[in-house]
Figure 1 (cartoon, rainbow, N blue to C red):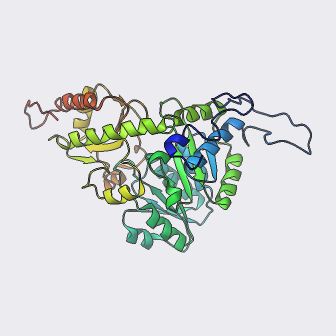
Figure 2 (cartoon, rainbow, N blue to C red; figure 1 turned 135 degrees about the horizontal axis):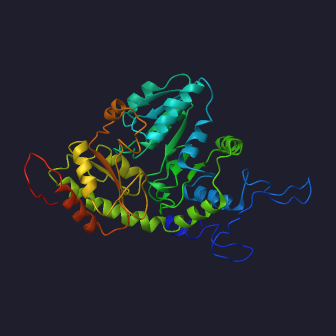
Length: 393
């Protein structure tokens, strides 16, 4: 099946049908424990924290899609990220992109630090800054590209080469792109991480995390940690993610096309100060993203004047869900300063360009012209310069 395109492999893989019954849907093995024939031949499964057939189906599927050798399914994206960080030990050091998801920032800054694991935030788009930050005890370079929420682009291959030259691991949060658009293991990364809650599952009905590696040593260590911590994904949630994967390509293709249209429209509006979208040729990371990815994704951010402008806009907008999260069939509008990055101090947010006027949009499957019209009327509700003007996109 690896000779086929990813679009085809999403539907036709080793989980295409159940070999015992021929069912074209993976069975949900809702069992906590498994009967053992005797203690000399315990079987493939004994207890669902250690392994479950439905979870195995998902883990094998995501490993194949990322062109890895071993996949892991966790209870959330942060469970995947946090467990992966436990590959480190006291005294180790992490070099991590400064423009990172707020939950990852919290884990790095407020949790790992207490266990003697140090870190340095850097501008990952600047290879010189990354190289300068590497210390003798650095064990990991952590990438998020496109980054959340200002969509900065890191050259995965270049950072991975730098990591290998310094005997470090490279982790990549691939949530925004998914394997449909970007496959970091092919570019030299050692571990790929996903919040499968987002585009992979795609329907705002499951919380899940995934990890994939192509290194036997990393796979063995992560399997031990997954079993030890026990933050595994339940069988029914694994089935939901598998079901979502089947439509991933068509969903992210349409949403990405709509995102390009909407980004262009927003960039022309006088009240929008800036649009962050890697598909723009003027975006600082456009050329890098173009060579390492198969598309620009369905997420963009745009900056309004201030918090009050955001308040007026979000009260007036009608179509998008105004909520935490992204990557669903419905468009989701988020306010990073109060949502995804609320755990980050204001001064730290502002250093990263996460102003009080910044909004993040995950584009869903609605007709883009409807969303543009909705944003236009909402922007027209913003009072500015004490004038009652009507502006159109």
